[in-house]
View 1 (spheres, rainbow, N blue to C red):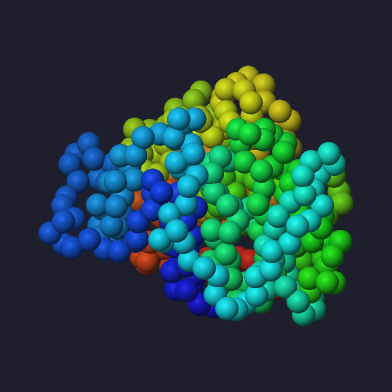
View 2: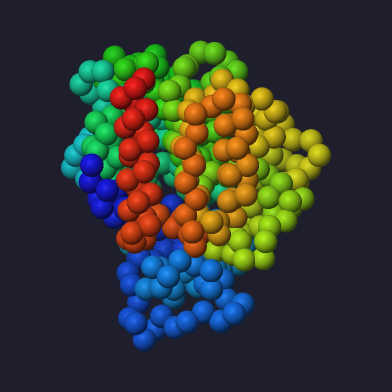
Length: 354
């Protein structure tokens, strides 16, 4: 498995997915420019191996919170840093039937063809309000090559234009399409997994819950990377002062969840199935891989979700990376390489034992 290739293309995907406000290469700064963090600096608790990237991380931490006023700008990709897909494995754009009464759904099929391959239904990140499936294709190609699997990534509709359950139904429609067209895609329908990062991790968790409830598409695994699982984080549930200060913060989280739910984040009532952390019964869900940084805004909710999965009898692998912030894995550091290796190993094992 080429873990370095996965890490390299993940960096490109982050720049493209986060838009112009975040676009910058993960190139180390000269030593003289790195500086040392002040006592109140958010970098004070970042793992030392990220020191070469402190100027970029500090810039990300200083960006204004995402809002209706700057949403269009944040959605605009910076094409200077968007990696085009590699020549192989193949990437094919498809339009698949959408949910009843809704538009059809665009997906990208990575490494389709052949016979009997495991498959991953992937949902991209972006706080429910930004991002696209296209931006992560190079990373998904590397994962598909490493695992010998098919990956279908979904261009689900974004909030606030589309409230819950619009995106969930787009993702479910794509999952059903993969199952129904398994032979054409070269997929073994008995080995289907879901995967996502950040908001995409939240969508993957929602999808696993919906698939369990509807009983139509059995899943063998869910791979959730710093998943966005609880609307109460940063609203009715405050976090420690040093947590969640880089890339995705409490104000960003309130905007993302409010945009998706159509009610303020942390409200007493939310639409059923919209917030994985609020789903009472987690029994019967597929085995899970959860990875999160120790200073990520989502660390408490992700650990709590892992605990609840374990208590419900769901085999769960949890990784918490010390001094790691939201998006930590896209930098070419030993920690990022360890994460990539753990993710590939977990998926590979799930497919081998299904």
